[in-house]
Image (cartoon, rainbow, N blue to C red; front, side, top):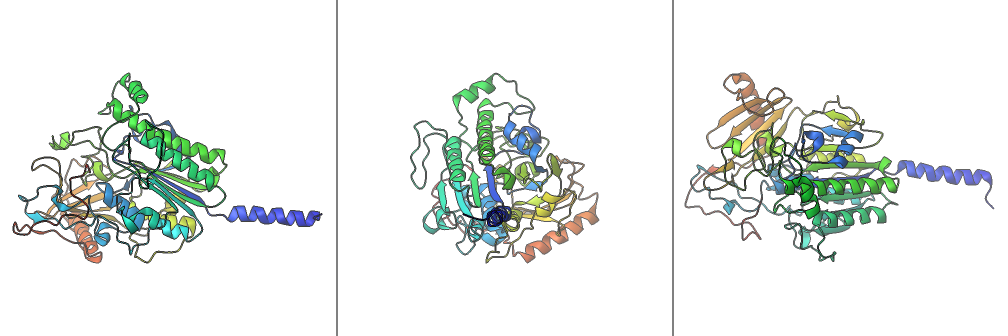
Length: 474
């Protein structure tokens, strides 16, 4: 029989081990969900009670940015590097859109995240984390590029359809099941099976990406509700509701297993919403399924409507409930952030971001850097000779954002605090401010060796991206 002292010591050691366990990490990402497509970021039509509750319990980052479309965001999140280093700046090959009449030839795009980059899952796994990924990957799926070969213990890749979907590896599911529900089932099961050890769950939904398809009972619910402010599509609202249900189920699972207090839970979207085009004079390209107002433009653009996304983090004991932080942040910050959360080793590659943990601890904290940057050396079309964006680079420093359009060197300068809709170009009015920001932008491009589009030579045909024989929906 153990002595009381020995029993007390055993209990103390067990409690100490539990206290020293690093936080679980859950990263949930919607697809094409706009900044104002959730209620806690402004929508008065879409219903997101679970995401709203997450914001009430955690912190909103109100100036957090991703890329203008899907693949480059995912590459930056997984590698911690900007597209200038990975070669991934868009979806597919440059032949997706007919740029033959434009003055520049886009930089050839890489479609698979290079294998010499250590992804975040690999670094967390090295620290003892169980790692799982269920959903849209989109940075290389064949052979060694599959997430199951790159650091995820478990990985099911699926995208393209919301009903009757395919999975890789092939996975059985009930007839008629909705994709968001399938992914959530896998996520909940992963948490339940790995609750005894630290885990990293990456849940990148395909919702609310086209084709716009939702569960009939949810569509019927929103058909009875009047639209507000450009948010008025019942099917799209139903798709958002399914993503919100997923967030709620994950939160409930963490609560039921008493894991919530030691879990960092993040929710965001991969790029801006599919909307705002009509205000830009873009009538083609699929139309406006939503509205990103007051932001300008939408997915495929490097105006705020295309790159500013909702971001919520809940870390009990660290983030203050119901708080908000407006310090500019960006996709490459997630890798160093999760490294710090997990005390995980650094990867082989250089990291371009900065840990956001100081902001999580104190909304008034400052980061070491003075600016964030983006570089897009290509074209994203929206119909015949209509463009969501032409080649452009940008810098945001505090409230100031400068865009350099590379076809003609045009500069656009905006004060985002006073003009979040980017309606007044101040470049000519404030030439010194514009020059200072432009000099810093050029210096950054030099530092990261950002590839620049060349003068268009019609005799040089575009390279077809590996594995891309047809145009995508991105």
